[in-house]
Image (cartoon, rainbow, N blue to C red; front, side, top):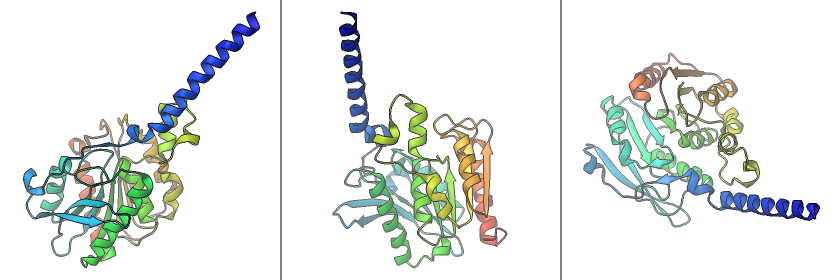
Amino acid sequence: MRTVYVLKVVVIVGGLYLLLVLAGYLGQRRLLYFPDPTRVAPSQTGLKDVAERIIATSDGETLIAWQGKARSGQPTLLYFHGNGGSVAGRATLIAKYMMRGRGVMMMSYRGYGGSSGSPSERANVADARLAFDSLLADGVRPQDIILYGESLGTGIAVQLAGERNVGGVILDSPYTSVVDRAAELYPFLPVGLILSDRYETSRHIAKLHAPLLIVHGEADEVIPVAMGRKLFALANEPKEIVTLPGAGHNDHDLYGSFEAINGWIDRLRSGAIKR
């Protein structure tokens, strides 16, 4: 009788675990993407000289991007934001870079900020190529484009940089892979088997040969600074890393990240950083 009881317990526990794994598989993108779908015009956030741009995809979706053009002699930041919110929530950051003369194009992922469709790794990387190509069509030279990845967007920026010639790459709070971070957060799930959107930055970063800056808060609890340091070790030269004591995931600017990034851009543009 005891054997039968133990078997029943094993079957019940095993069944519950399989249901948990199934729930993780079916709900994985809800745990990865937190979009604000509201479409907001740049002017509604107080931004001047920033226009809404519409990019059509080959599979019938419509992407919304905000674009402010660079002053003469200045680079354009092609910015890939994090997994939460929208472009509108980063209006202050856009304004700060444009005050320095930098151009900015910030693309809304599918499902974010008025863009149609649903986000995925495959779609986000494909759409990043479209945004890059739209800058080229405007006459922006590849060497004048700096890819900027924020959090989730770092995985997109690295994949694009491995395919295209760009002036530089900035990774703000990067991760080695979504699989690695998920395994730390959910050690009881076989995340390596069930994750579809993997963003394996540590595998792609060797393809990157443009000048690289990594910025990471040392108190980041969302993406540990150890991941930024590991990517730095894997990356090709020229590369720099700035870690900010006390800084978390979203408060870098309070600890000097904006100044560090702009200083790096200035040195890059002056030729002080050599490929």
